[in-house]
Length: 81
Image (tube, rainbow, N blue to C red; front, side, top):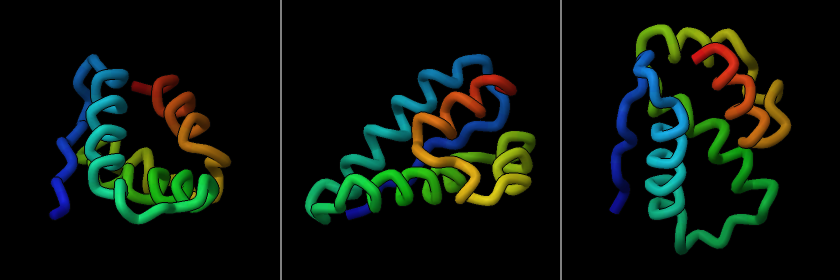
């Protein structure tokens, strides 16, 4: 069973959104046994599913390979939101 991600547009608590996203992502991928590298790429790519409006536009402006790790994405995202 796959759980949908909560949507983030531009509310003030980006940290809460990341925690919620990560919890749901981990639940969705618990049994897949992804390697660390594959897990990082999966989180980076799937994060876009949790965005809408301005946040979604920000993500689309970046190639997913512009983020080396999910933490890198988080840092860059927090700078703007």
